[in-house]
Image (cartoon, rainbow, N blue to C red; front, top):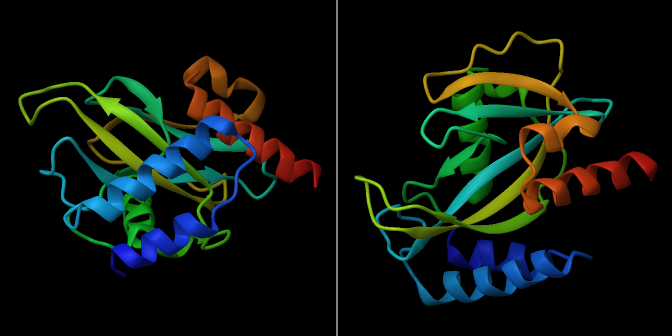
Length: 184
């Protein structure tokens, strides 16, 4: 996959959320302008990949209490130069849950959500943006999830309780999308 593949995914992505539509437009422009958009040392930002992990009943999602940011998030991370952002999202999900990739089922290979979020300056680098490309995956919620050293804790959280862990607008948007899937 090259930048063109991500641009094609972005071109096909449709959303009814105005904030996300703006993120898609900005992300498309960023990717088109930066050949090295998948490298984490590109400032002022870079593309990241993540997965919104649902259980088979679509009534719970998997959240990780991120050690470095001290917040609850879905699995995901840096592309590290890999232009196949779907592969990045699946790899990060496997690494952060500690589960073999065979336990992680891609629901569809289309983008589930797009978000841009600001990362504060740190010893690792200046303040920058993450252009996060999110995919929907499914995992059995009866599996033991060992995790790794990047998280304090990993939990299955009922959709109705997600806002108690993370009340960011983008998380709310993914919860709403999941609820609409359940109603379909």
